[in-house]
Image (cartoon, rainbow over all chains, first blue to last red; front, top):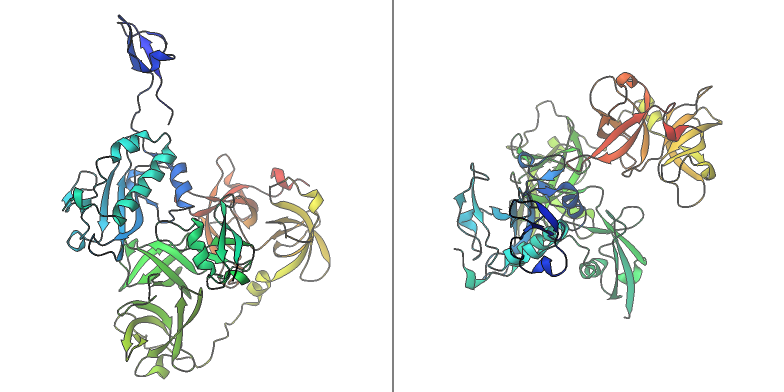
Length: 182
Length: 370
């Protein structure tokens, strides 16, 4: 994803010029308005980026057919090893479902297995029904308060996916008692 | 013991490699964990030698300088996809084959060992674990009742071979020798045993026990077809760099060398290799030869079937069990090629499974014009 570029518009919405230098960061002058040239349409994750991760560090990545097309991935599952809880450091595999329909925004992350009753991890919410997968009760994963800002700071889609997967593994391996979800 | 530098190369993307300095007494697997190239999702990777055997348990002292990381031929990391008959869950292997695995759940991610058993287009596999013990009490494995003695060998993820010897338990073992079925792993007096589960895989009344390895009645035609024949490549006149179609000659089964078009990867040394001759040379056209190992982007010669959307290609590891691969016809290409020899390219479809893209006949394909 490219860095956001601004344009300077008049009161009727006509583009006067592309913002340069200080205009890019500062406020518009009187009678002129600064607005982004392009606004993200909330596209899904691209298949190319997805496959580059599948073929290297995350072979378990598997797209959800109902939410994907030949070029985009609207949802995917991945296996992520983590610990049972802060008091039980034994390893357990979590099956993670990621809603990547609008990958420019912070994606929602859910735990499909183990079942809610068998989850002791402090940062996994109890099960609920979500419009994304209404037929099944799933447990949202708490990614922490700083996640959204850090995710938005990632410049490219590849960076975003890498950061997301690494962060999920980080949360699942290091339960945060200060941010308890259950 | 001193330190030694080794280079690990990722098999799926050979542009990714890393060098690590490790103690010579450590195993290759221990060094691999320091390389940073192991999958982060718990999926398996093996250090493999040129023949595809596991090097994981070897010490770094005896390992080559460059170590390729990949998967063993009979190992798959799969998601349980749908419930099958009885205890089986179906899944798809990376090469597009269909697998049946007992004792796993739909939606579960598991490492499985693919057995030699194939039936109705399905291969049978069983799950093993990577943490501590590879098999826990209650796990189901799919194994063949021993033809001799009362032990079977289960896959050992550490060595990458079938070398875990466990007793096979059945009250009338002689009645089911050679039968493929589900066994439950149990611990008796501290030792693991495999107990046959007739409730999950009943023995047919018509089953006849086998006391020695059955020699498969070989179809002389298919045996002939599957036989590798020597070929010689004329490297300098390769049709186009990187296109994997070469001019050469092949020794025909009846004797004599004939000109040939050869697809596949160039041998590392020399100009001789063994290939599968799929079509004999004719008066006006060369023989068609496929080298027996495949990679994405490589061309292959195949006869386009009259019906169906898949074809079978030679399997060097199991010559009698060809690999079934779906094909698609390149848009714009006439479908009149059905029943004819065509040039197809290995590629990956949207699900990252291998497919063949039919690009034309050897007569009109641009890379075959020699």
